[in-house]
Image 1 (cartoon, rainbow, N blue to C red):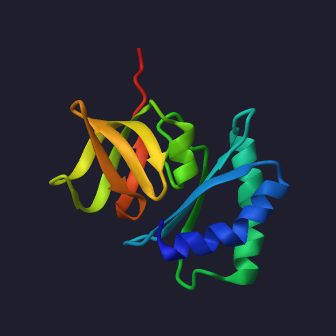
Image 2: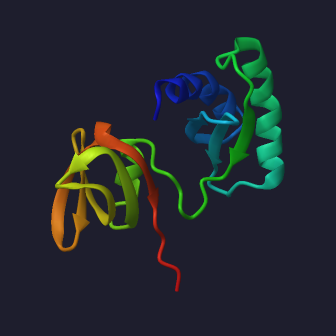
Length: 151
């Protein structure tokens, strides 16, 4: 997660939690059109109406606090079945599940992995790739998401 996304997570987490949701993660994508994407989750699932309600509440906070000075589009979404993994606790929760990982720099000669989550040890994530365990420092993970097997 970028520093800006972390700043926004800290700012908005209390607001989202007060509404009965978990702020699963934040992505701030800069480009031709900047996008601030919030992923919310709840035990009972997330509806379109839930996303609209959270959007309304966090828009007010973002307008007042103004953490992003350029134009951007706010998107609120459920993490979905292929949910992104933002924190070590997310990895811990899904041990044994398939995952796709993109790194900032190569580990074991690769920047991209399709793997199975084996363990979380301190600041490292252990994944199994082609019957071998690979230790990835959490700080080297650019993006990761579950890769569900649909039958």
